Length: 223
Image (cartoon, rainbow, N blue to C red; front, side, top):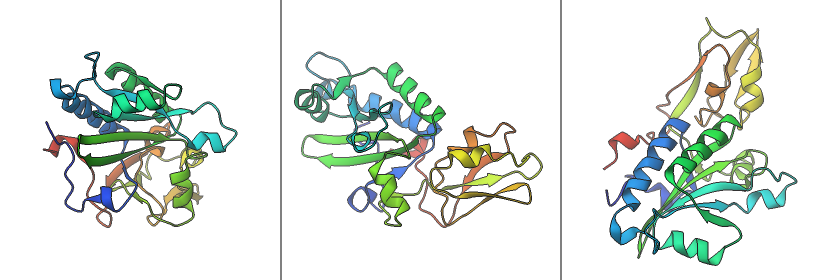
């Protein structure tokens, strides 16, 4: 799999990244590892070129527990990152990368991907952003769009929702509000990140296709 991302609208040239739910982030990680495991893309030590990088965003806040949030894959970029930022990056394996994605999801972080075609080959990144410290998400809140929505929207099952409001506490885009003891979703604000769906104790939230947004990234359909 030489190229795992090939979007018709070429969002990489227009936006900073595209939001994806955790299930697709995990699939994408697997595809990234497989794509980078061919011999000509291996690191000098023979390991898969997957690197965990310390994002500069938390440095601008008082939050210190979310330093490592970016997963890079692709050569020569992985080895260059380790060489140029020895104190801020480290090589990881697929199992550790999976644990990171799952842990960040549990904390309510948002996954978004970035991809670039370069002279030395494709470069991929999955950022796992803390809403309180991510500079990209702060810009989104300022209504300057640099992220592509996932292509989904959160949907509430009125028969299951008990109006506890727990999911609303985790919504990173302020797209939820409680009215008449039922959760409501603002379609103009929801980016379809899926954070809320994992916080509902009654399984009353799910993601559905939002036809007003660009197509979702479905890793199984990528060539």
